[in-house]
Image (cartoon, rainbow, N blue to C red; front, side, top):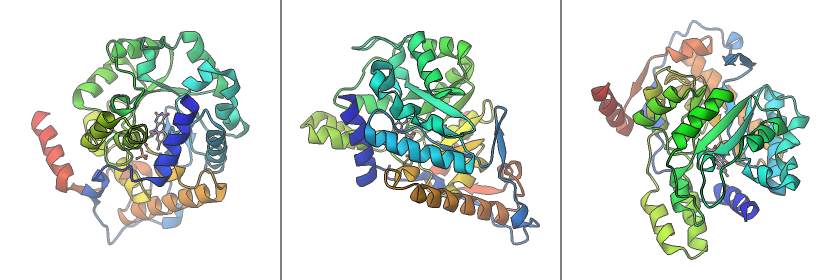
Amino acid sequence: MIENRKEEHIRIAEGKEVNASHNYWDDITLIHRAIPEVDYDKIDTKVNFHGNGIDYPILISSMTGGTDLAKKINENLAWAAERFHIPMGLGSMRAAAEKNELADTYSVINGYKIPFKLANIGAPQLIKQEKDALTREKIDYLMDLIDAKFLIVHFNFLQEMIQPEGDRNAKGVIEKVRELAASYPVIAKETGTGFSERDIDMLVDSGVKAIDVGGLGGTTFAAIEYYRAEKQGESEKAAAGKTFWNWGIPSPISLKIINGRVPAIGSGGLRNGLDLARSLAMGASIGGFARTLLKGADESRETIEKNINSIIRELKIAMFLTGSADVESLKRADKFIHGELKEWSDYYDRRF
Ligand SMILES: Cc1cc2nc3c(=O)[nH]c(=O)nc-3n(C[C@H](O)[C@H](O)[C@H](O)COP(=O)(O)O)c2cc1C
């Protein structure tokens, strides 16, 4: 049952160790400026994403929908999106396309003034699997349901490989993305495994409006599905979950490869405002937080508010200490890349 699966994802993400072993944002050091020549109180965090003004370069990343618990989480996150004037994505909306009675677990966010909202469907659902592909009518319905500005198509093929009930066919997906991108403002998004150079070339060519890198370094669905497979006694899938725990492209590397060709959302492993600053310095237009904002989201709005306030404070401190009066200046801040990320970065430098 989809509903149970969604709830399990949330509970596992809240309660278990689901991070990749290495967080690649730690391999980026922003260079300290002892003489910042900036007034902290005048730091400007506002940005414009495809013509949509927002107060902070923060996206509440796609997480959930389809259950009562998800409805509560979505409502609390939507409250925070209004409070901070930042955008919000929803979890995969297929459940709403299949069952009318689940629609309000997503549309609950319509009660809040959110600068822009992002609908979400899975790339595997664009082609026939055991179930038929999502039709245009259904996609229109999902966009209208939340008055979405963008349509996220998420890529989660690692998850599909580990989860007991996963879809196995990826043939023809990029053609479907190209067709969709001709009629909808599509954002391609990974879910913790990142996009490679070839993927990004294909996506840019397909006409997507932006890429949300969702790279390796934070939540990995190999881990989340490992716990589910183990519980269901699917020992081969559980073993594969362990083996592929650290599979993927580090988030900052996907940003480096995009290199400004389309607006990028820096995501996958963002824990705090310093990570956000690092992602912006690597070329992201905005940063996406998923699991960091999930913690406590089912309990209270105050917890989310505190978390976002903390992210903002740290972002502003990083901006101040790099002498960046606004986000554009932060993008030009001096940085140095070390550790494992440097090895990845060198590999791509040799190729470009
Ligand atoms: C409980 C949970 C559910 C998620 N569901 C979705 C989803 O339905 N669609 C999607 O695009 N991403 C989904 N994600 C992936 C996140 O948006 C994000 O890409 C990933 O968790 C990596 O970011 P993080 O390290 O900040 O958590 C989900 C993440 C979590 C933790």
